[in-house]
Length: 69
Length: 250
Image (cartoon, rainbow over all chains, first blue to last red; front, side, top):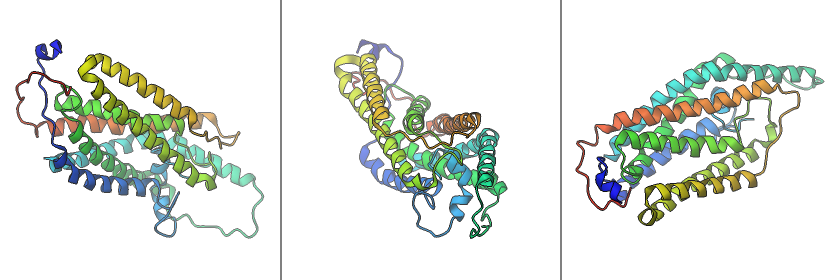
């Protein structure tokens, strides 16, 4: 690791995992909801009746690569 | 600290969603409209069902192509931006001797390959009228399985790299990890079942334009997130701590 001592770069200190966990769970919940409503609702599966959500995000769903119909 | 990173990730995702909407509108909507035109032509050829009731579209094409498209890209990009911030919080300082903007850009490139490019290689975006309606649940399962395997391959390779690092050094550990990654992805791409439902008459140029536009949209989302997050998060890490000896976490 001789290059590591010569290189003028610094080593960033990693954030402790226990500080990240609560935020990770929070972000995962937001992310899953975002994924679900843009990608899946009233398509592959449905919580609400009808097709309004599907039709509204229809173009985005196709273009973002989710299987749509 | 992590909360501040998350907030910046969501805002950067908002920005990425707006930019992605512009790209989607300019490059994605033309082939999408042509696919819908093809769908209508096919429907016109069929014998009309005398019992069919003319359904009124709940959302107009204009709404779908403007506010609907914007809503979709913004919501998904904000979700991706938020999760990116968390992955960044884990990865920064564990990926190598990188500053905040460099970590952010590298991580976004890895996210693009893992979350967008590799699943796209097996199950690329499909325009309307190119798939069967009643296989959507099956195709969705395949898509998410592919996504999960892609994430597993990337995470596994990064862990392998970390494990090899003390003995082999950064360069060789990286090369070995990338080779293992490519083999794993190749095996997954080969093993996952193919989906070929496209009607023969479907115009090939529309298909190509649509899929390239879709990949371009995902690239732009990750590029904006990676570059903008690096700038937005840098001020949260004040100063440049002095280099320490015996670095093995690179």
